[in-house]
Image (cartoon, rainbow, N blue to C red; front, side, top):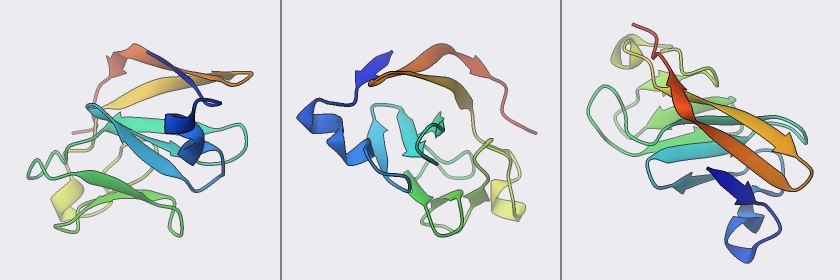
Length: 104
């Protein structure tokens, strides 16, 4: 999948710390050049995953926490999240359809 970051629906990803859920993937802009993409559903309970820019972590409402590589950081997040490779080429963000394995 590719995302044109200049389109209005994706301008929310223009600043570091921003994030957006796009279908089954939650995408976070970590820095000007770095993005992270993970499954949008928690491996613990299936709840929505959000990005917390203050901690550089993905979280769900039931307190499962994950680093930007999808690794679980607490007991509820122990199964990890599926991650997706991201590449930025100009204003186009590529999120590769192949998945890395979630950390068990």
